[in-house]
Each structure stands twice: as structure tokens, then as C-alpha cells.
Length: 82
Image (cartoon, rainbow, N blue to C red; front, side):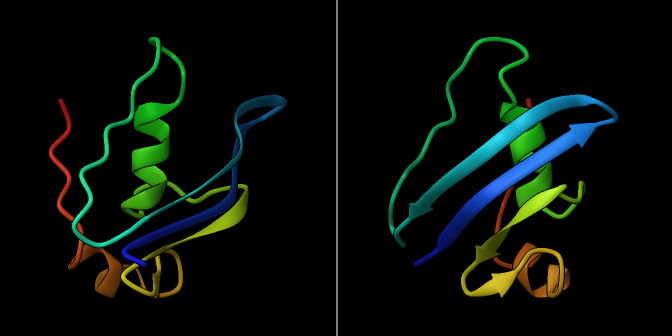
């Protein structure tokens, strides 16, 4: 699996910004995050690219944990915001 996300959550104080995101992406897939402004697309991408730590859950890129092995994970993902 190229990308594996399980139970990602992020809170800003008492505000629950992202709640329990779970999905996986197979190698060779093209994926798009679609949603209204404020839906959490950018926050999710920040967690997947190790720029923001989740409150709970885990994410792996090519088998590398984005928190514990962030350099290896980031070396395998391209992200161009906006």
C-alpha cells in the first residue's frame, strides 16, 4: 500500500478539526481530496506530509510512519499546495 491512514484526528484546543479519517491508496492510483472550504483537506495533507502532528491515529507513506520516520516518508511523497 502506498498510503495508509487510520483514525487520524486533530484538535485545536476544544475544537475537533479532523475526526477519524481512515483510507488507503494503492500504488499507481490518482487521488483527489474534494470538499468545501474548511472541510479539512489542507489539514489532512499537512498531517500526511509531517508538517502537523495528529492528535490521534496514524499514517504511513510507502510503509514509513509519517511521525516516527518522517524523512523517509517525505522522500516518497510529492505535495504542491495551491
